[in-house]
Length: 411
Image 1 (tube, rainbow, N blue to C red):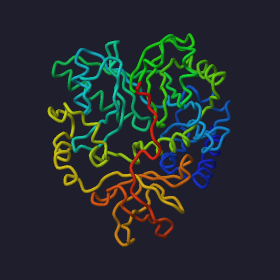
Image 2: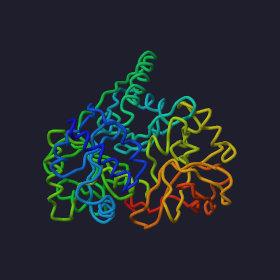
Image 3: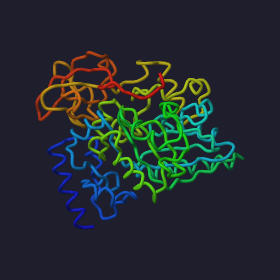
Image 4: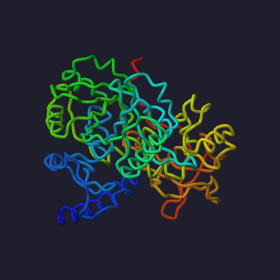
């Protein structure tokens, strides 16, 4: 283990120098011998995965391909990511919806059966504790997936609120789901998965879910979602059967399927304009500042009842006057603007914000980034400058996503 940790640290330094995907690199910060491993650790090593510390876990940053090659392969075919380090939670009890709506601003009540929504856990100041997906299943429970780096915080938050609800006489129970979780992403996903599923995947649209068998492996929850901007699914599967599933998918005759790591996952999500918790959204960021107004459901804007509602609803009402900063996207040429880079006005005289994620885009062959600027500099087309290596680099505010998303909506 000590040798592996030393090698990982050396690789991380190489990764930082050569690839510079800073939003991922910021989390390569735990080099202790107490790193956790997913049930697929040995599988990753056998697949020549380069294992690095990430948010307290030892995870593959890439495999045989370069990060750019892996990124482009997902855009063109199918890539598989191990996301088993994420927290999967089951919420049961007849008052589970009321309970969940006391934690998030989503309209869980209004969800159709076996459909889900992206939402956020909030604190009393309206800050984002984490982002998550909540699915309303037909099996009398809510299926919740949240981030690996927030496992202890999220589960403690959920447990504490459940205890408060029970004291008020509500019926709710929260428990962790101990299963593997893999993301199968890319335009040829259906060609690879359809032969192993006994229903038409065209019936499974973006953010819907089903409990099914896959290639004979029972009790798999498949959800049409992902973190790449491509069509894809996440599959929750028994830990002792996930390797069998991956081997079947990797040997598909319908498309070339490859394992993909954290490096490609980060550049893919950035091209899709998606936030990374801890970088682009934090406990000090409200959804309105983060340009995520849509996570505040219409009904909840009327009823409130979620943490920080007074702050967030006031910001929504006042619109741009209610906030002093806003998350936006940028493109630039020359040396790329990384996470932490200072953003200046067009004259390069005044500091107006900072970059939270940035990298050269493998798809667009230009530099992309996102970050926060003072609200009156957030209009699309606004020229700005980045401070990179003590030099001012030209940039421009642009709309996100940088690369159009291809989620399957059935239309």
